[in-house]
Image (cartoon, rainbow over all chains, first blue to last red; front, top):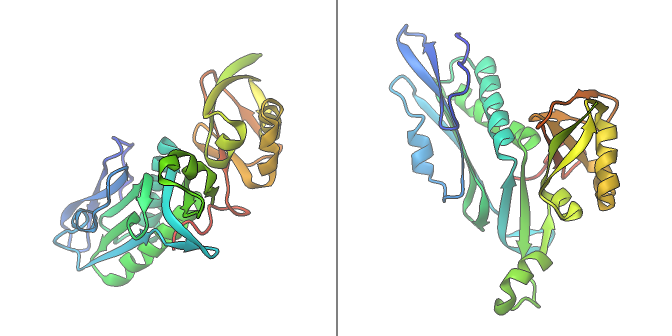
Length: 176
Length: 93
């Protein structure tokens, strides 16, 4: 397998790759940090390719409770350049472990993410299903362990008034 | 010889230090532990996360210890709080 080129930006990384049928295919690593709402459709479509019979997906959703307290929303903070470089390292590792993987897309949302919305979406394509399924699990497990992104839970507190919204956010929050 | 590096504080460390970023003056060579101790000297409340923090120098992790760091003017040093013993555990469902 050829070596990935140096980074050309946060949007993607083109790699020349030859699949088992001998066709030339450019494999993409797509790493995106955004404050916009994430789109499962967009992420999964970005890894579709003609030779791939499988696209595997992981979606991380903000939950509505933690330790019995009701979570109103989560706020994600990142050390952006390092989060991007660590995510690209994960893509590199995935390709070493599962050489048949074609495209990898990791989208992470930053800022406020309301409950039940996606904070992270990972999509990976491969010719056969077992590689992309395993690679997606590896991706999210490793992301949790190595990528400098933090989440802060904003809890619903009874003494929080709408007028004091800004003060309430900091009073009712806790680092995780 | 001394030089200036840019320290970035994230998450809990930014709340404790009450600052998001600042320039500090450090020696060209310093251990990661010494660098941390200098940050605590400036912001004593950082001591609260001593057991749950690593540094990142030029965007590479450096755990607190005797590892000798070679610093250059303008290098970024980030304070990376950890939610668990060695990972950002349990961030996602």
